[in-house]
Amino acid sequence: AKYTIVDKETCIACGACGITAPEVFDYDENGLSFVTLDNNQGTVEIPDDLYYEVEDASYGCPTDSIKIADEPFNRTPVKAG
Ligand code: F3S
Image 1: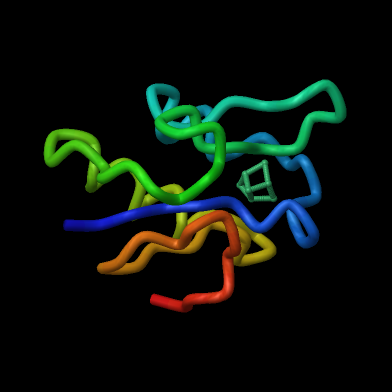
Image 2 (image 1 turned 90 degrees about the vertical axis):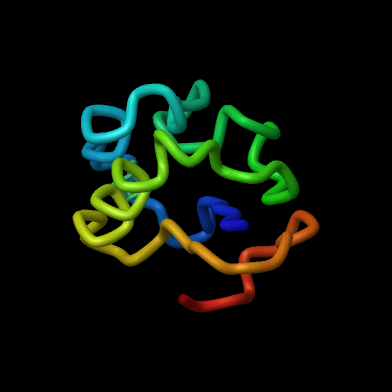
């Protein structure tokens, strides 16, 4: 299983991730990205059919704010991967 979360401390609202993976990332009122699967808690498994989009979005983020890990983040984007 894979989980994802946006580090909103480092997101600069560039807007790339929502284009790359529109079913997973959306933006809050400040333009900062969040994971729609679980309101950016990092606790809901990424559906298999969306995983590659999420991976692309993570690689494409200019500030490396999209974290991916094998275990749930439980609200804190501290894990790399
Ligand atoms: Fe933010 Fe990176 Fe997306 S800067 S808007 S998380 S591509």
